[in-house]
Each structure stands twice: as C-alpha cells, then as structure tokens.
Amino acid sequence: TSNEQRTAALQDFLHTYNHHRCHTALGGQPPISRVNNAPGQYN
Picture (cartoon, rainbow, N blue to C red):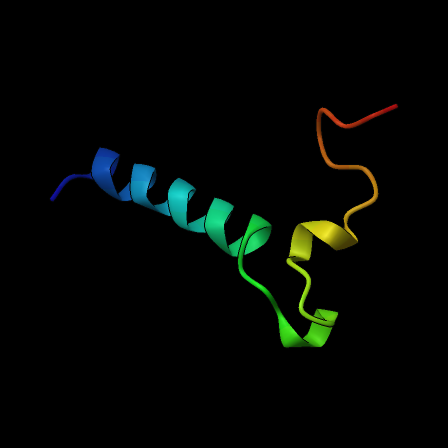
C-alpha cells in the first residue's frame, strides 16, 4: 500500500528469483550461478 512496501517486496522477490529459483535454461541452476563477479565477492 506504499512505495516503501513495494520496494521491500521487490527486493525479496529479486533475491528469491536470482538466488533460489531454478531456471531450466541454466540447467536447473539459479541465475546467480552464472555471475563471475558479484558485488562483495571479489577474491
């Protein structure tokens, strides 16, 4: 019912979609499995 609630819901959705939802085009892996240089993951 507010922009803050929509923003919070979008963040949760994007995390689930990119980190937990299996994608058939990626062999059942989530999209994050294809990222080589995610922010905060520089080693």
